[in-house]
Length: 351
Image (spheres, rainbow, N blue to C red):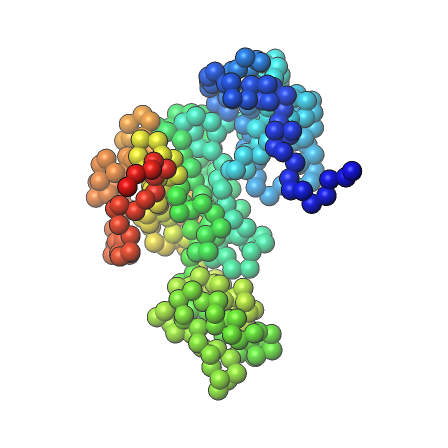
C-alpha cells in the first residue's frame, strides 16, 4: 500500500551509513585543517569537507557540486544553515583530491573552527519587493573583503555575519556577531489612484504594526501618520500603491555583539553601532570598510576563544567605540523600556 500524506520520511533513513552506525556513539572530533572536520566513532571516521557557495545557485552549479559528491563520497553531502556545502567523506584518501577539485572550480574550502563561516542573507534586489538594499551584492562584497578569515582559522573564535535587506528581518541579524541591515528612512509615498483600484483598504490599514496607516474616506484611500511610521515596508506587501523604496535615502545599518550559543554566557541580541551607511553598489565600500574595521579591532584585542560580543562586554562599549573610531550618537542608545536584564534567553531552566 502506497504511503500518502503521512508526513516526512524518518530522517534516519536519509543518513549516510557511517552516520547511522555511529549515531549516539561518537567518541570525539578534530579539526585536521581549515574547512575539514573529522568525526570519530566505533564504525570509523567521517570527514566533513565544508565548501563555501553562494546562497543563490544555478542548476548547472548544483549539478557540478553533486558530481563531486558522486565522485568522492558516494553522493553524500548536506547544505548547512549558512549556505555551505559539507561533503561527507569516509575515505581519508579522497579528502585532498576533493579539496583540490573544489579550488579548481572556484569554490573555497573553509569556515570551520575559529573562522568566518558563510553569510546568511535575504533576497535583496534579486527577488524581494521591499528591500532597502541588496543582499547578494552586499554579501559578495563582504566575503571578498574578509576571504582570508574564511580559509584560515586564525580568528579568536567563530564569526557569524548575517544580512537582512530590510527591517522585516528575514535573516538572523538580531543575534549575529555582525549584522548588516537595510533600512528605509522615509514614509511610503501613496499612489492614491492605485490604492483605490487595487487595494482592500481594511487589510491595508490592519497590516501596519504601529497603526500609522489610517483610512481616508474623502479620497477613498489611506493616509499615513508620519511620526508613527517605522518604515518597515509591510504596507507595500498589501498594496503596490504604497511606495517605500527610495534610492536617495535607503541604506544600511550595522549591528554587532549577538549570539545564539549558550556557551559561557547567555544568548545576546545584536546592538546597533552604525545607524546609517549609504547604498553604493556594486561594492558598497563604506560598508565593507566599516565591517573590516570592526573585525580587525576584535582580532587584535580579543582573548583566544572570545566571541565578538563577549570581548565588548569585557572591555565596555565606551572602550569599543574608542578602539574602532566609530562615532557615538544618541541613535545608539537602547531605550526599549520593556526589556529587562532578567529576560529569559538561556536554555538553562531556573526560576
